[in-house]
Image 1 (cartoon, rainbow, N blue to C red):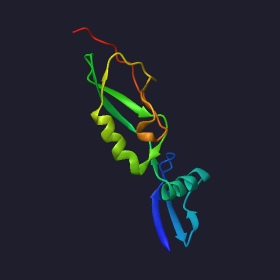
Image 2: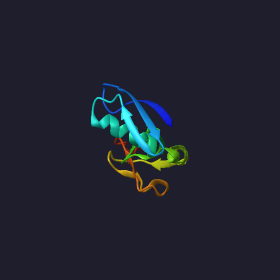
Image 3: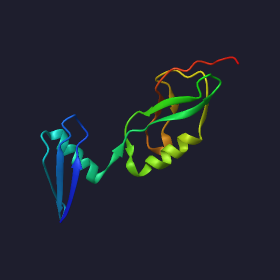
Image 4: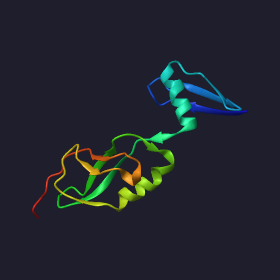
Length: 122
């Protein structure tokens, strides 16, 4: 038997959830809604995370561009994705919503600009 305790992050209730795996039979308790149960099951079987970070950008008076992933990436690939993003240097101008990295590391997930940055002619 394996028991794992989670604090749900899906909504502001922050339920304390207990997941028990007894030889492949998974039970979840402590959740106040089905979203909490789904969260615990997904966190146990296939944890995933959104990427929100910044990427270096040149050609503007702003030097860092905030970016976000179009969907969640497998948690095991998070560090590799972040390392890749930290090595990038984009060129201004960039428009909010623009895909700046397509299919990051073969995940099928795009990295999207979270703001518009104009080019400055310095």
